Length: 254
Image (cartoon, rainbow, N blue to C red; front, top):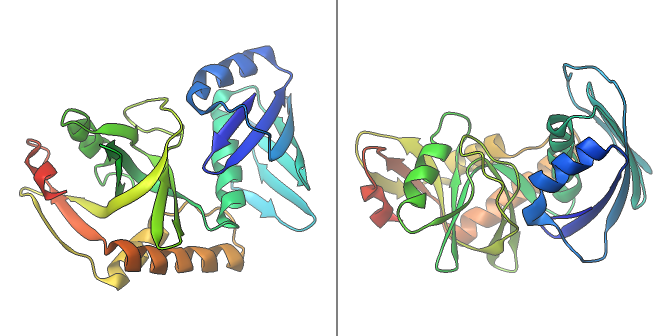
């Protein structure tokens, strides 16, 4: 099973048939036939039910530990020991991809990603900000929702690229792989009225870092996220979008 996330293809050899079946159903839209960048052997075992904090050790051997899985990566080959649970595997995929891609200045972000006529629209917001609400309204207003919870983003050559992910929130979608240039980026806030205003850099910078899924305490990852925030701000000049869930009238502000 090969899964493509952002610019990377990861091949998984899963011995547990039930877990493999669940993964095929869960990540079908992200399957790839391209040559794998990484190959991971997956073995299931009865680890702790309740996951603990994530621990990441990097060096020649990269090790990622949580209560319900352990993962070792040496070079391009990895070994994952996990509970036979799609939840544990999904969590591993989020954590590993976030850590791995940050080295390429690609970041997994809390937010919603929508597409209309080839243009990608980015909406950043932590839990409770209204990601699923705004996604639901946009889905009824001519937009294709690529994720209502997590997506990948990267600043490159004067452009901001966004990538869909199989990680969804309340809308419980599965989605499919998509990559495109972001036209606009909004920091979302619920409001009784619909309006937008330019975001000051200090506000955007804090919100960007808050929405970044950075599990590693490595200073290099934090520095890369800071650099990405600066680049994205210069390219897209983000806005704060105050929106009401009463109707879709905020769409004209996009």
